[in-house]
Amino acid sequence: MENRNFTIPLFSWYYVGITLIFILMRSLGIIDWSPLWLLSPLWVPSVVACIIISVLYFLKLIVFLISLFYKKL
Image (cartoon, rainbow, N blue to C red; front, side, top):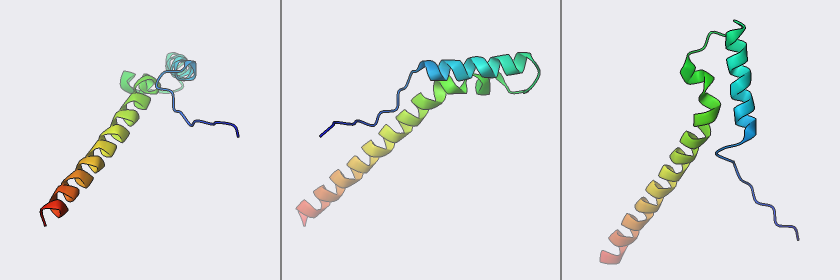
């Protein structure tokens, strides 16, 4: 059986390409976005990964606290 892993790269040339397209569109006057959104393809994947990891650690903490509670009973 073939091993297929699903990964979301935090850095990819795809993100760089989209960023360059956004910058080109802004210089041509097609869009009027702030620099924060022009560079969003570079920072959004990292933010999403941090949020997912934080939620998973929070759920792990909840499960740990519940297991401590039931051990004391």
